[in-house]
Length: 413
Ligand code: HGY
Ligand code: MN
Ligand code: MN
Image 1 (cartoon, helix red, strand yellow):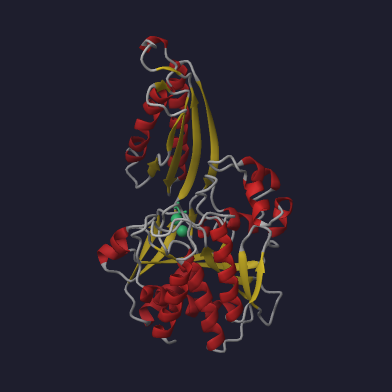
Image 2 (cartoon, rainbow, N blue to C red; image 1 turned 60 degrees about the vertical axis):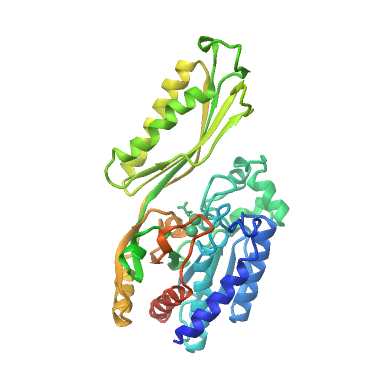
């Protein structure tokens, strides 16, 4: 395999994809079911077609490329990641894994490998959950975990439901369940991704072999109080939603620290309503994102959140709503494939280490039911979900090379 050619093609593709953002010069903002998503999906279809793949967009808005195997009865080997992003995010999170998958397909063709199992490149439409606060929409849909009711439930900040956003994008949410793949039709799932953390870069290691991905519980909390004049309303007569909410928020990070096992909890979004500096807030919204390799910690921190809300909002005299936007358990990835990737790294003298992922991925959703392998390449200074996110294109070529040799073993057996 010609690593220089692979690096060149990967860089050309990712450089072109940088055009498809709603915030030019301010990072990548490519939210699901938007103009930018459509532009990226169309470009990915072209690349898959040029690679000689049969292309399909499914009822969820995912894009797939098929390199048909000689034995269609065998479960396929799927490789991919997501083509959506966070707001003002980086240029490589997710999308680089899609391009690596397409490069693997090119390599399979150029090496004249005749696959027994079909090889499928996958571009999932909404892994981040950034627009609707959820997550793993596209990868969840192929497992049958998304319904029209689900699409009606969740809204974005403009109160647009997933359902209406899909219709606007040209999809029929009533047909979302048709996106489900037949049980046992996916034999293996592979994902290449940037680490999004500091470990590989700090330790100058080329490849991360991911053995475990954290579980995630995500909530949107709304505390309801009463709006009043900020100057004339005595402190003992207020139903101050912000006062109660912050008495809960300030505890959340410590609940994670107290686990002492790397669990994390984040309040990434807070909004006061109506948001006037001289108005006692009527309501306060905030998100909670809890992650751990230990399910019990997810449960404990969620329980502490509910108890604190009961206590503090009760004392204020208001009420609260809490919507569970995502609940997914940790996943341990497929040891035999990890061993195969380790052997490939040794063969090519790539330095590597086993590591867990603190970020969720489509591999977290699909790995719940399908043997899954994931590898990381270094993120410069460990930065991600921001416009300074950077990884060398030659590192993606290494990822594609490793995944090509792994895929070759899987699709020919
Ligand atoms: O939030 C995450 O961990 C991932 O980037 N979706
Ligand atoms: Mn991300
Ligand atoms: Mn990602």
